Amino acid sequence: MLSLVLASLVIATLVMISNYFFRPGLELDLKNRILSKHYSHQLLNPVIKVEGRDVILNGVARNKDEATQIEAEIQSVLGIHNVDSRLLIQNQSD
Image (cartoon, rainbow, N blue to C red; front, side, top):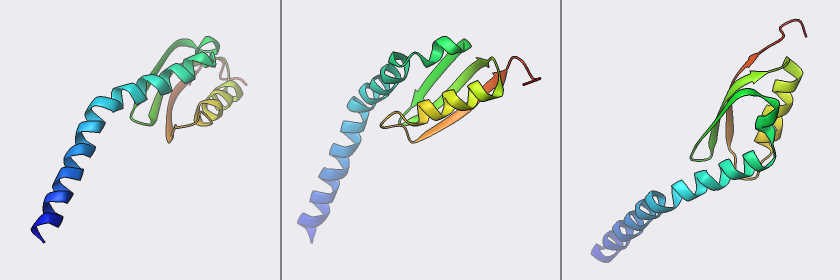
């Protein structure tokens, strides 16, 4: 029983250590994949923040259709779990 508890503690510790060291790499990789698709060139003042596997998207889209398209394309990047879109629409008449 004691060995099972110790094994569980070792595994939990290794998981926490790996998250500490590898999470920044994961976030950087996801951000690079998003930026390599050039989504940000379609936005005014783009700010793309990656937290774990979640993305917070800020900026100004030209219209609602463009904002929806950018959100969907970022959501389709392998590894992204959630896109929190905080995009503003430049032209509200569309």
